[in-house]
Image (cartoon, rainbow, N blue to C red):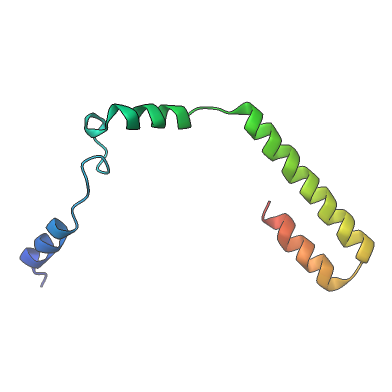
Length: 83
């Protein structure tokens, strides 16, 4: 039913690099350092993102109430939903 030899040749042509397969020993020391720098909590960045999103939501609610038009209201609902 399935031709395994064909699937094997395709998978060998599209073989992933060793680092993509998840073996940490295949990563360079530079890549390890970059991954460690990117992982972890960033509370300052989080607070800025949080405040920015709440300011945007507040502005959108204000715009929706001020214009009181169905098209504006629907647009504000969609934009608030993306936050």
